[in-house]
Image (cartoon, one colour):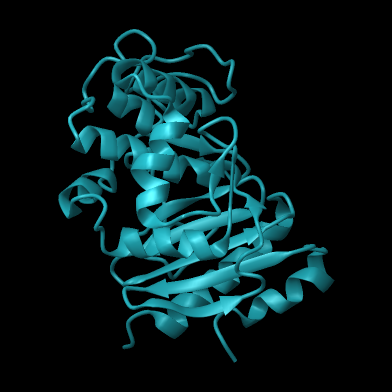
Length: 277
């Protein structure tokens, strides 16, 4: 029995057309399921790649975390941490004062990409490709629209990205450490599709809400975990305490099936590959 064996039930139980996954440690991929090179829509997992590109630009000095960006009194930090005040949709106006609420926002990421292009003079999709995808060798990953939710990729590519998150080489370790630190701690918020969390912890593009009752990744991922999921039925997480990460891509939209199916598989990954008592 392997950690990902439970995924064999997803098609008969929930009619998941296609699913693929991998478990990754610092040594590389240690277990796989499904077609590793099948291309899937990422939905909001796109935000992790886009955020990494912004972090690379910050490290290069092209922009700063506390530079003004977005609505009045908002900064790059606010936009990355979903505290700029923008609502969820791409055309949502600002509905709260920056830093006062955690409002998960596609528009915030899109405004950030536009700001990035303005200050660097480089189209965001070009910088994402040249600054992140190409150096990591993610040749099957493509941003074709919104930097918040419109990329396609494969488990093979995202496993490489997870290995980078476990031991960063493209970015300095201190840059990633800052990115996974909770920003504006203590803010409650609603995670679309899952409900209200208090607090709803977030870093710089990375969800930091792991290890809480009702979380999509189950009960064994530690509170040090970071990553995110997508409405296309996709997720990526890394647990630095366990030294393990997991990628799962499907082509069935997130819904009640995922709330039932994902936690057990994530728990099995940590049971098999996490620290032993």
